[in-house]
Image 1: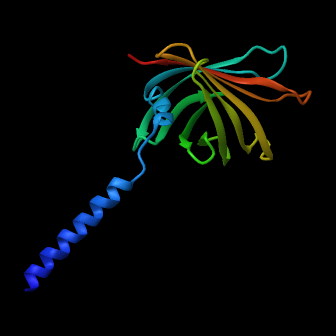
Image 2: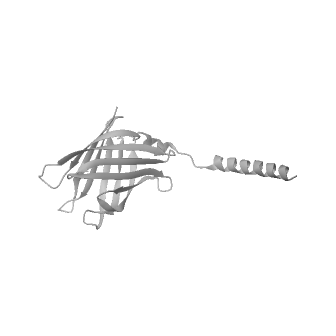
Amino acid sequence: MKLRNAVVGAVVAVAATLAQAQQMPQPGPEHDVLKQDVGNWDATIEMFPGPNQPPMLSKGTSTSRLLGGFWLVDEFKATLMGMPFEGHGTTGYDPLKKKYIGTWVDSMTPGLNLSESTWDEKAKTMSGTNEGPGPDGKPSKSEGVTQWQGPDKKVFSMYAPGPDGKNALMMRITYTRKK
């Protein structure tokens, strides 16, 4: 009798688990947008220190993968301003906000950056805002735009308030997929 009760209990537990699994969220078409980022990338970084000043150039790499079909996880490595740099980002789609959301942390910033973006399928562009600590440690806002120029090339541009208070190009990263 004990064995039969144990078997019945196990069957009921398996059935309940299967019923729950059928109700688990599944990635939607919005998550398909993230798939195009998956892979290994070479990065050319241009940092714009100020008006009428030439950009500071450096090279880096980015490795992106999907986590459960929901989250893009990015590992970025470079040398910036002569120092090793590492960054870690996550991007997913929030169905309640109907926006892409993200986080960014790196080896040169003590705080967490949060982003919200929208995808323009026709223009192949992800555009949004980032909030987090600026170089001075005070809260800062910036805008980010990633323009896809084919399946193996994308350009990320970051704009932040310049000396005149107007948004100016601060950084541009051109990514080329490694073959």
